[in-house]
Figure (cartoon, protein in one colour):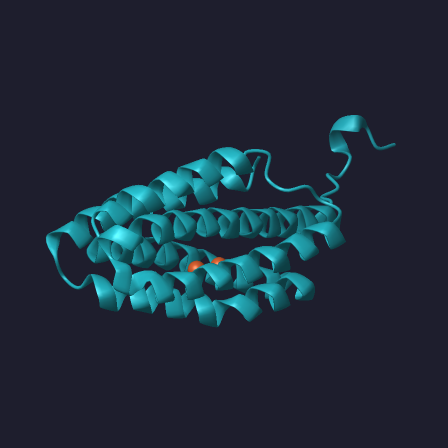
Length: 187
Ligand SMILES: [Fe+2]
Ligand SMILES: [Fe+2]
């Protein structure tokens, strides 16, 4: 007779995999919403602090809006709701965009490089996991945005250069973005 203590532990592998994939899709949807708010704020302030950046920022905003729409579709397909703290993170993103835009081109570029570097690293980790477990719809959505995120990161890295302001902002923004990733998946 098998007693309660000797019963084998049943690990629900498939639900855990789906739950992890849900978290990634939710996080990416949130991340795109934050990015939209960062670029919107920078577009407003850069009219005075870095007007030559406006066309680039408008282009990047259009990319982020497309990415956000894409993940909204995947969220709906999976029957999951967006992150509960989206509004708070959206305001934080807008404030980050405003503060960095006050510093003009170096501020905007440092913000872009820092945020997009952390985001890309995380997207690569997600892709490795999602391919391994066969979550192909989520893989396709991420693959369709990666080249534009690389474009954003590289433009930020080129535009910021080696100035001290760039390094300071980068040092502040990168860990903040990592925190958003850690928190955003669980709300
Ligand atoms: Fe994006
Ligand atoms: Fe981006």
